[in-house]
Length: 265
Ligand code: SAH
Image (tube, rainbow, N blue to C red; front, side):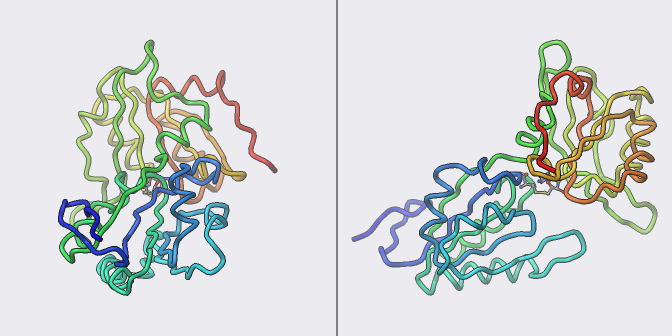
């Protein structure tokens, strides 16, 4: 018997398959039903640093667990090694769950991993997850759009690029300072001072609202609201650690009125 694979060629039943599964931002209750169902039948799981213990608890005890790392500066397995591992496990006939924080197609290299699987002729499926922008902003009481404040929302990465002349996030700063929009910055903690400075240099008001959320949707969630001028210093003194999501826009002011989530202490 044959079943169609994602590129419409056929693969034999009994062959392994890779399920690229979005684990959401942390709270296990934000997993999709499909993610939970697929995790329950995993033979082996390859998971990233951002996947919470509460999410891993949905794996069957017999499933082999392989930690792939991916903390900043700590790539336990290099991307090429992860790709090769997924191909190897699937070729051994295993049901492989590749678990990634948030949504696998948003700043998660999910596309790159699938391209390698496609090249190797390995069958795969993708399970969307709640991306940090969505889950974390909800739990912080900051709506990303609002008819009075923002009709556009941008997701960008603040990951720093180091060249011999500068260390900076490589972003279209003018586009990020347009009015009536919200900018969500992933991986922006270490570049926060640079980000705020660049936004002001490209026309944003120095007192423009910005928020940072650490460990959003989890028991250790912390939210700090401030301005482009004062937030970087306040973040340093409050000791924020990764993962942090940064939200820039007038919608940030709604946090005072809409914050609802009380992290368990
Ligand atoms: N694929 C993931 C993003 C991976 S990049 C997604 O869709 O969410 C990793 C970045 O996501 C972190 O540096 C941080 O900016 C953000 N992030 C992920 N989980 C988070 C959380 N619980 N709280 C705050 N930020 C989070």
